[in-house]
Image (cartoon, rainbow, N blue to C red; front, side):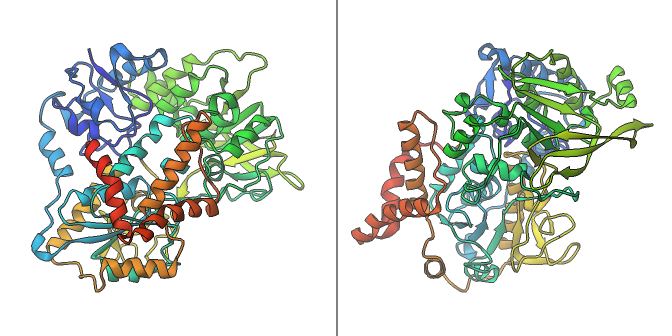
Length: 589
């Protein structure tokens, strides 16, 4: 009886490496890995050993006999992936792809005759933590992780929706990574303000930038800056307790909200806006956001898309999960299917994900009067956000397909709304002293090696990984193979003598950081914050109660540092005492 990959798949491919019969695809060495919405287990090849279950950091793999009613659909989604042959795996369950996969995962061993390798990583989200993990598999490596925020884990903490707690479980893995010898946090420290790029290079052999893509793409239409119009990213950060957005004013007094864009983030915000607040009360949603949602007047969220349903940016698991919500109606008005695509569907020639999305349309039912609802509207392009002093609606132009091309019909419409959230993509931001490709919104690079300009020469000792390297594509776990690629190049460069040697030591780095930013938070400080949030959550019957006030976060971190100063043994002694039991009890995934 096979195992099944379900909705919370993070695509980090740990299951691929654990599987003894090579029945989980796509693998990191296959062309569709970076674009795949999830991984899939071949039911005909699975030997039911359970190795993948232990490897999965987000509990996404379930034995068939333990599937819940909402999960049963994933048995078919997994099986359908294997209906069409793939050149990369002519023999499913065989070993043909193993040699290639070994090349993807194996990195050269650090040459110890060159001395201990020391690396700075800028960012503390998934890309950063996977890079740290890859480096720390090597003996004698030191990794210093810098983040401008007082808390780590990036989008896992501030981006994943609070009702997706299984996905957030990957944070446990990052905490295990941070407990390894040679790892240090420097949180609440901004590179480019408290410490420069050149200073990082002076203290390390190399710097890896894993700063993500936190800036939203703009629509470029009138009214975009009206009160009541904001990005979905900022709204997500608000309800997730991000310190930068805890004081944002979010008006939920109108009956309708409009989301422009239809990716997974758009579905997240629509789901949170229409959810029964009681179902969110046990999650880690910010307390102030929960109270605002309890007072919300929103009855309907409209999700706008310029193209048709088949071109939807959301993934199959996210849409399937949305359809499973018990007290929310989901409607799709005029899906706008391209006639040519309908013809391809009839011939069975569709991409797996598109075919699954079209199949899920059959699950749409008639709405129930009085229930909140999410309405998908297609072939509508926003032309302006309207209102006098704040948002009152969105003007849209109707589109249609003409011989496969998208063309305007000339028909327009105004959709009344009091809140407009834009979710049309992301781009990175430039860090002082680091090259930047403004056109693509990334740091220019070749396989993670940073270039001095787009198409330029390699900058020795400077690397990139994650979204700042490749753009906003893939999922949380996709950053694992991306980090492996970058670290492989870094280690090769170190072994070949292409990196300079640090002119200053790690102790000097700590002194420099504390001089520039006395409010720096280290690993002990983060563990104290984490423990306090969990304690408050448990007391309130919640998973966690996030602390958003920066002064409170700093006070908790300082209290954790005080005992080490009084003991005379220094912070490292305290860290060793606190980490030892945990390290003995936790097996590294």
